[in-house]
Length: 388
Image (cartoon, rainbow, N blue to C red; front, side):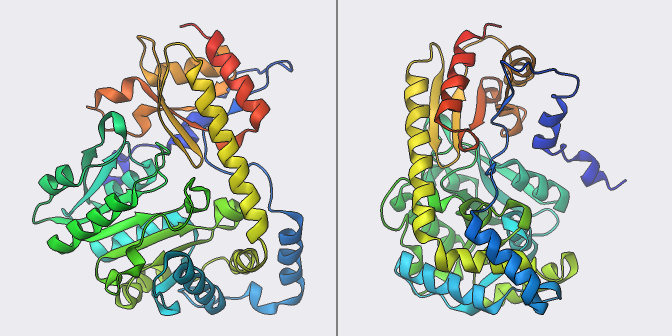
């Protein structure tokens, strides 16, 4: 057994699903599953029809394609990103991947090797930590405190001669918080000074609560010397099962990433790429409606926590709420008990923080985008009634 693989913790969402085994959920109290951040419905019907049409009439949709992705989709991302961020991005600076997780792995494969270091703000996205562990890359935690916002000065103190990158996720998974544009710019400047990469994961950019671009990094004509942006089409167009993501970076880096991608998947999912392209060209208004609904759910989450005795809402945004519970039990014990005693499946902070971090004992993540407003109301009823 590869010792690195053996030492890497089990996939948290799959671990949480095992807690459901042997538990019966009565008809009057069905399970409320807020564990995984994924749309629970299929793509809108027009997009499903476009996928079916491609499957029936486009022979190339069933064959190998370019390793770095469908040229038309790469060009569409470049054009829309250039417009949205006020910068200049070429199609050659875009790679399409099998989901955003693969984009992260590909980026890391070009950046770091055995014994190198990557700085991750905590609480972190667990799949990022898992990949670094399996790759033999040392994860350097950057605690964010109660604000859940990383500090540039604190990050600077963690940089060593082995540091290869700092990773930011905004809107954040798991904390939900949206990083201020000035902070993101300061992190880019820090990384540039030290000759390391800034990896900016914007999987949830389509559900940002602000107007306009969330940052102006692409307006810098030299952005590609430092910045690597990651994106997912899964959340925007409900394409989670089709696995389509993107990496935006310097052409030279993408040439190196191509080696990794070719050996892992050869090419991205062909039908998924065509679905993403159709969505980008035709579903702008629909996506605006999806964003409005997510923001409405976020408001309901904020109101619900304000009335929930003892709990503290630490962060909320995009798909997530991150909160501290009031009881003298660990968050992983709480999460297991909530399944059987309240019919609620959420994830404990122990899945997002180093073992030594005491915050892990009190914190939980709720993926509220998985449930509608009525479901959010029922969630708070159950949390309010629960007693350890």
